[in-house]
Length: 356
Image (cartoon, rainbow, N blue to C red):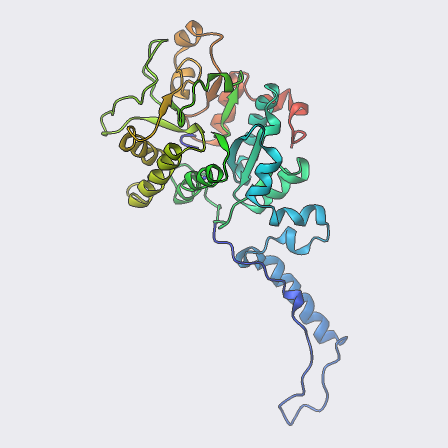
């Protein structure tokens, strides 16, 4: 999430290897080991333990490797194309990207989406196998993994290299969806829906987005890309985007990927994906049809949670609230609770995940 995420080797089943005893080359060995001898059985047991511990490093999820339940193991081979065919409605899909630490936020966001009757359109792109299996166990068909799979150990820490690697995959995932012919709404899961956002996607523009600035705009503000700020670029949020499968939208995503490659993460410059998105928008504003969504409907967290006067003046107009401009899981949860937006407390039964 902007304020507030993996190389997968081909699966290999080591149980397909045939174990056999060969004649000993040593003249001192006078008898071969029996397949049922304690030594061999102990060796086999040790092998199973070692594989269980190290299978993730071999690109082999433990649950997939050891399970005999086809209802679980099939999700390791579930493709993006299959998933989109299953969840899309009228050629459109709602997408979020999660790793295991974000599952509570996924659940909360899903409850708000379900309240607007849009949950069937949701596809969860899992960035690790535990998330893939958990979501599909509770909500079959609504999660998919897109290789290569990275190590997401530190992906939850904002500003870390793991977080950068996690978020930097976003344009690649979205581009794959567009290339398969689908329109896609992307949301970070530290958001909550108060109304249905789709009526706000007016016209047939290529890319729709929201401003991440806290400065108050007039209610009838322009829907053009805002002018660049002090850093020479706009400050558009990369956490709520709608794209149509057009050449213009694909161009923006390809340029986003190029910008990320030109400015990778380093210890001195702990970059994230959002500046690259803004450079891509600004450099291709004439080649793509861009649309800035209304601020009163899609406010940044720095405005909604900081300006009570503005919130009161725009009451009834809010659609999606982003819990950004704050760092840390516990701080985000507390702020959502303070505003009555931590829906899992009272509405978990409305979650497609059954309360997780």
